[in-house]
Structures are given as structure tokens and as C-alpha cells.
Image (cartoon, rainbow, N blue to C red; front, side, top):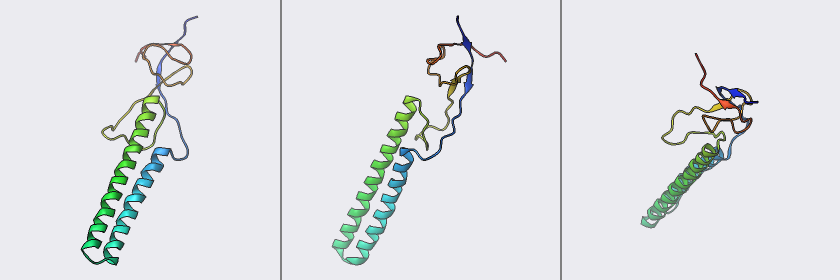
Length: 126
């Protein structure tokens, strides 16, 4: 017996924070902590060497922030590719529509057939 189904919007309520949000929070903490340490080093060693050390701490904390932000972005992209929900935004992307099967609710990766229940997807008439 051949079944047919329609595409329906699928919304899933998640609780808790994803790993990508945690990495973003750690990145923010690293850059804030690095700025504070750079300021303290500048005050403690009020000389040319203190200025040099302060700039080094500030630059290294900015690079660490950038690396952690890239990691969070990579996690989001991997989750998007695998069809999982993710927290935060992917840079450059503003809007996304996810379709689900009207029979079983599974996320659709094809416009022709549902991977979970093998129902044929047909265009919904208005």
C-alpha cells in the first residue's frame, strides 16, 4: 500500500544549552578576562616592558576568543548539516525553514519521500 503525506513545519522545544552556546560564553569570558589581565599588567609594570606584555596578553586573548567563536560556528554548521537543532546564529544566515512529514513528524531531507515512514511527499493544494 502506497502512502502519501504533506510537508508541515516542524518545531521542537529544547531545554538546556547546547555545546555551541557554552563555547560562545567561554569565548566571551576569555576576552573579558584577558582585557582585565592586560589592564592589571599595564598598571603593575608601568614601563615599556609592561606595555609590551599588556599588548601581548590582549592580542592572545583576542586570538583565543576568535578560535573559540570559530569552534562554536563549526559546531552549529555540523548540527545544521546533520539536521539537528542548534542554538545561536550561523554567520551570514538569517532565516531557515525546516520541513517535516505530516504522517510521522520526521524531518524531511528529500522532497519526494519520507526517510522514516517511506510516505510519498505530494504538493499541498490551497
